[in-house]
Image 1 (spheres, rainbow, N blue to C red):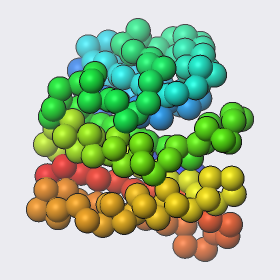
Image 2: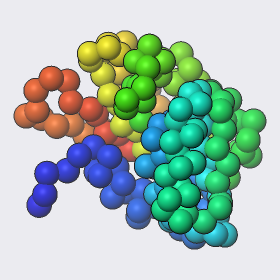
Image 3: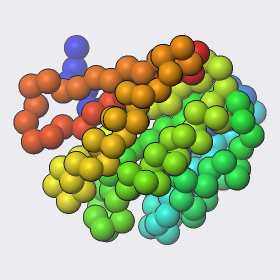
Length: 187
């Protein structure tokens, strides 16, 4: 087995979840890697809504999608993920992807924050269809601190186990606050 990065680990499950024709959300567009993956998986008959508050993220993602020959099945939104409820109906989304932290190569002061991330996660639960997947990569430490990580993990622990399956994994022997992958499946 190869040495998995957190994004590869999460992508493994996203690949199993998303089908052609699905509606998906990339809640933290960043450099567009997850937007591209979701776009390819849901195909021309599906659609991806991608959110970020930084113009730089939107530009990088648009360029990545165009260079990869992605189907034009996406809407890139210069908008907080805490407003995703405005763009999709309840129980309509197959997969929602979050990478919490800051834009790689971007302004570290514009990192995700507990308040808006938890608002977006609460909305995600309403937007996910039954059997839908929420994929979280939680980055912490350094510039972004630990508050968001701790708040999100506390929030996840409180989810009703009759409605959601929460699977938290970790890099057990990696130093320096490695990212935490979490999957939430709506039952």
